[in-house]
Image 1: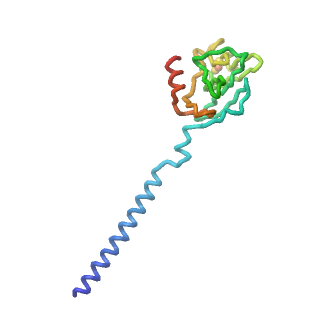
Image 2: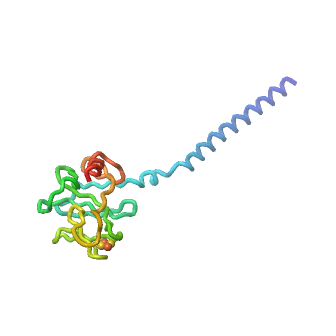
Image 3: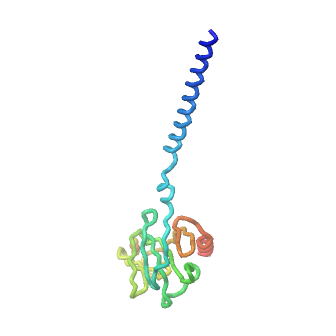
Length: 167
Ligand code: FES
């Protein structure tokens, strides 16, 4: 009698342990399902190393499905401290490459040193300021953070916050 009770309680304990371990594994598996994938977590940020860029070079990259213009300004381009950032002691301009009139992507004319929108003739200078045609305002500036010679798009660093406050 006593022996069978002991066996029963052992079996009960064994089942309970298996159920508890199984439950814990299920919870871990469920949490993994709910957590966003690492690639999704990192998707909001894009890091670009600017160390190889030449003076006057424009690089266009994609961030959150938008074209982003990164222009390393040359000494012949007008200066605008309110819209420029300094990376490795060189001035850069970072802009969302969508015309503020109706959203076309302006093209950069290196010879004229301006961005020209083919849709309705809008023009922007090298700082992204509208200078001609229907665009009602300058090109927008995406949130960014400077990390050495790298630009992290999607993060609001102190340089971005200062620029937006002064704009
Ligand atoms: S969309 Fe650029 S000028 Fe109209």
